[in-house]
Amino acid sequence: MQETVVLSLGGSLVNPGKPDHAYLSSISKLLSELPYRFGIVVGGGKPARVAAEMVRKRGGSEFEADEAAIKHTKKNALLVAKAIGKEANQAIPESFSSARKLSKKHRFVVMGGTIPGITTDSDAVLLAECLKAKRVVNLSNIDGVYSDNPSRNPQAKKFRRLGYAQLIGLAGKNDMRKAGTHFVFDFLACKLAARSSIEVHFVHGKSLSDVRKAVEGKPHRGTVVK
Ligand code: UTP
Image (cartoon, rainbow, N blue to C red; front, side):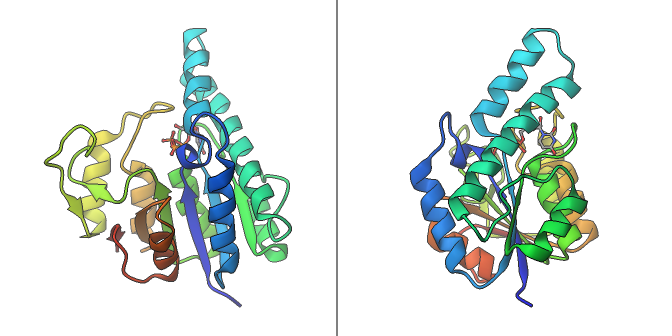
């Protein structure tokens, strides 16, 4: 049986406001060529943030804002599943147990969010636990984990390797528990990765050579946490 690798695929890559079909094709083509089984959790991107904000403006609760955002993660997941084609499930699972069942039939299992209060980073680590994957690759618009937000602080330093405790420390500083706020990697996701010693690789999702290396567990230009 081929090894399973789980990807946390940032919604901002897949859907920065409208679906990026060129990116969907190129990432699907790359992954289809690699000899692995995949679990892919897709993020909400801008549409999820806008939907969550609308719910709040109308007086909705944080729970309802999360529910609205989750719908968009599932829509984005469907875009990814369609781009991959027949090797992927074409109905997005609502739970991890459904995802596990789908993984018996499909080389690719694609899903979005699950329950309010978490993010697709945590879903990705939970899916890795569920599918017994040893490696999670986080694909986003940032090419690694930095000591500070690199878009605001030009002095921010990129880490090549981190331990779980360091990653948990960085994520804890940024954790506001609100839909559409930005974490390095969700705090809970870091804790879950640590409890199961799951390797987490952070690469820029558009650098396909780094994505390939991270999937293979080889050295790349991003950050490795183990
Ligand atoms: P994401 O995990 O995509 O967050 O979920 P993000 O930080 O916006 O990441 P990008 O931009 O896609 O890379 C979007 C929102 O959906 C809700 C949360 O509100 C989250 O911020 N969500 C997601 C949940 O409530 N539960 C989930 O399981 C997943």
